[in-house]
Image 1 (tube, rainbow, N blue to C red):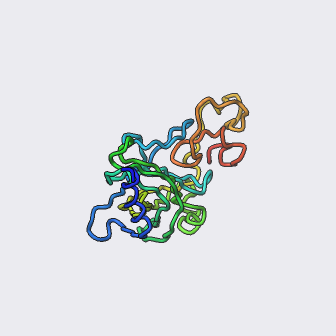
Image 2: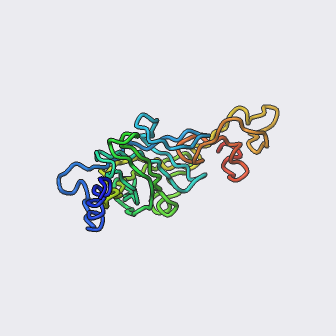
Image 3: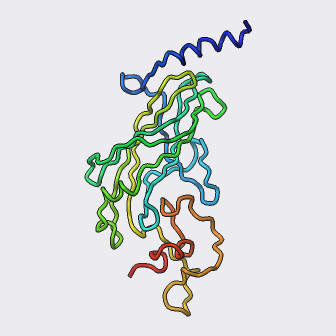
Length: 240
């Protein structure tokens, strides 16, 4: 039997054994950890497994434009061997309301591949996780709180889970992201949309917008009123 086949045999036996290990529950440091929530660049919208990439310390969700919050999460892996790269499968998400009480807990399907620490990418991978959905917003944020410029702060705690290539499961340490929920707070009304010879703003103009638009309009970044006026009445003019 060749050397390569000899090395593969123990891995096959481990995979068949069905062994599972969940980190962080027996006093051992977790192999997986969440480093940050990546800030995707408008026009590019590529989540790169780069620990030096720009990140969000706090998320913002404008429910006038969007009813879910999707986070591109940078995940690290401290396992050293190549076969200990981790295939991500799901995320455990718990959401605290404005009083700090855990009001929502759920498992969210995700995907991604986190290289081992010794790999070329240096032990990093990315997962896209939906932290808030329309039902969460309806249950946790009364409409009255986001009226007239009001904001309600929620907090999402995230743990990602996956398994190595030889079947050992790993659960990351928790990571918390505050998320401010508002209505209309991310809509911008630039001077280019205001013809002083006409009353009000001309956000409904069909003029081409040169600047790239956010990857998730209504989340984290400003949205030009001219890009959303055709679909959202809130974008037609600033509130009185």
